[in-house]
Image (cartoon, rainbow, N blue to C red; front, side):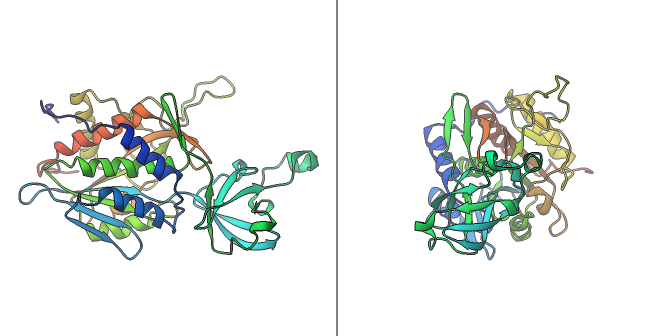
Length: 362
């Protein structure tokens, strides 16, 4: 596929305003099923940008920004608003509460971590037996969820109840070239999608889906994909960078993606075989524009594309993710340049989409 760089094209900028928006989104609480606070932030940010804005029955925020012309390709970009976290499931008294995880959370990382509980974000901590009081057998076994509690203290015993959501109490910060915070999966994608709406190319009808409940089964994306009827779908997400050196000194060959490698273009994951025409398109654009990118190693996991591509009579779909370390833990690490290059690649790729892109067999 031949792509010629458009001489007047400029990548949307990630500056102080975009970093501030990411910080606001990262710090906000939005566990799967409780995304209202994130949705309000997005709604305020996109006010006046779109031709149509709908909040659907499951809580997706569906936004349409029409291009200039008739019969333009309908390109859906999806970024999920939810994050992993916890739900209060029992009250043991004196401000001690039993919990279940919401989404994929590694229980080994939880003891001693501060959390926010409920709509008023009551501060608490995930408690476990102190190490110096454990037996040798207990120390040799991984912690299980039934051994953990959220401790709000006696004074806050009435400030939480069964059914409340809880999330990690991690404040976003920038550390040199890196971004550190909770829920970068997928507040990076949400911020990217907002920025693309502000700089929407005129050659497509841009369908922006800010989805819910991705972390517990791509549920919002299934509804959004059916409703928006796209010709093409791209999921904007954050993918694990498992690129640390191996402890035994051997080569790390199962890194999935790497920091400083640019946006990760998916070929295959646990829920989607990416449309090869879209893989080729993104690579060709990256090569023509000199934007670094990497191919995410095929493997497990999935994005909203996994649900969208199976809606109606099928939707050619792909995912593009910012790589980050330590996803689904209290704090993830991503690189600012990888985010900038993800935004640039997506915007450039959108400007080259036309009705001919999907001609021919998949």
